Length: 113
Length: 115
Picture 1 (cartoon, rainbow over the protein chains, first blue to last red):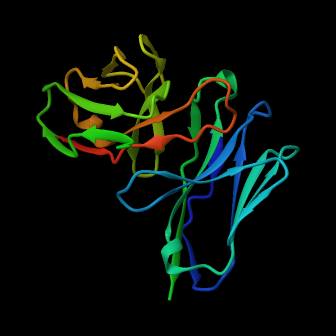
Picture 2: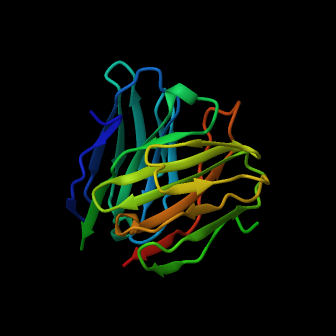
Picture 3: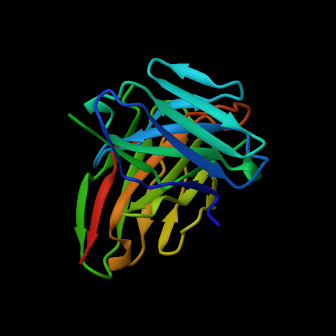
């Protein structure tokens, strides 16, 4: 079993739609959680950290469910510019103070006009 | 700040050749790492370093060497290139210990083809 699992998609949605991605992680000792965005042929960039209480940044909402060990990302009112691959990222619980992260495979989103 | 820089952007090698991918950061980050990204495989950790003089292996270290003589630089050496090493290579850096939410900053990547 992969340590961080995501549905690779692609998710094809029309502009204005709401879309949600889920991600599961294998170890309950993980402490830090993130969503990164990667545009085609570009480097990954941090979209948002995921806090225990859930957090929102404009049209983006991230939630953490520790009991079920999953993380979600909700995008409201999708824009064409949201088309990208979204990477679920978890800190390496075995080395939580080193900065080492574990990346999911990524979920591809295509927003259509 | 330039952030994380990588050179070269593109490289074509013949099987058996060696080369060094360069990575530098100017943010005084302790943690630096190298990943490779292949279609359908996601980012896989090759080697990482938690500070000058300290390196360790990641998930896929075979065929690669690293060293960390300064905080700023973390070069990745391919000892004898093989077609299986054709990939996109990303270098990343972050603050390390004591900070729970430590964002990793990535360089623009090196696209390597081994013939």
